[in-house]
Length: 327
Ligand SMILES: NC(=O)c1ccc[n+]([C@@H]2O[C@H](COP(=O)([O-])OP(=O)(O)OC[C@H]3O[C@@H](n4cnc5c(N)ncnc54)[C@H](OP(=O)(O)O)[C@@H]3O)[C@@H](O)[C@H]2O)c1
Image (cartoon, rainbow, N blue to C red; front, side, top):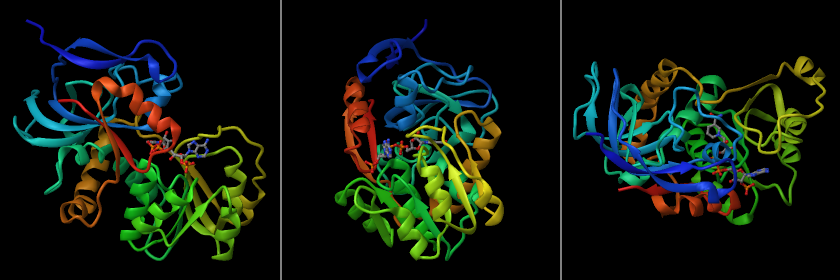
């Protein structure tokens, strides 16, 4: 007999109101997968893009939104040896996190850090996978470098500030209010720039330029980022909140030996994501276990209030992460 579960689906592309509760069959774990009974699911900006019809899920992924969560392993598929039924995990999901149950590759699960609650753990995977792979692996940030992150108070930003600071970089962050700037400084930024009052290009140039910029804004930030970079600097693009198209003079890229790169996590192979998980477990999980680094929580909503959670996120009033209580 097919078991059913409660989930939130996107009934059509649109605003937060298109998120509706539904009943779906509980998925079955296939080879290499686990079935997780979720306690909490993280809410991420890419979920809102998917809801709006701007970020289609990969063909093999669930159509339900939700890229991360935390809970207890309920069943394991063939070939899974690393996890057992009853283990508490947090996991990167291919989709389907706004639901009671979800399947994901076992290699995309990580243990719930010591002493951490499941709501906090549900906040970890999407931003930590994204920040680790873009700032440290792709961007090659090293101790002593000047690092600028835009959207410093976002889920991504609050993670990037803490990790960059912990690994010895000098951290600069932009945000849209003094309250958000204060939060960035508390997390380890030596200088937070309220972009409504100050020009980040001037601030960074006065410091000698940024060695690495993590940007999610795009639009007119692209030429401004180029100006804010130091010689040999790197720009890593992870989103384009203000659009991907812009007129750009590439001469400084050549003259000042700049690197422009970027990536997006979701379409990468299972193996690539498993490798990021391995690196996180080695380099970052000890920091979470010790409490040296912790997710910044903004608010919690019931699964049935997923629309309100998206409204909160798209208002940009939040600082840190928003979670859905599933169980
Ligand atoms: N490439 C990847 O693999 C990947 C993975 C996850 C997330 N992302 C992207 O990373 C970004 C952050 O994700 P998140 O989940 O952390 O989102 P989030 O918490 O909602 O943060 C987005 C932040 O961007 C700022 N913002 C919003 N609209 C803006 C605009 N038009 N211009 C400038 N700033 C704007 C807001 O801060 P202020 O109020 O301070 O402006 C907001 O805090 C999103 O764009 C998301 O799509 C990429």
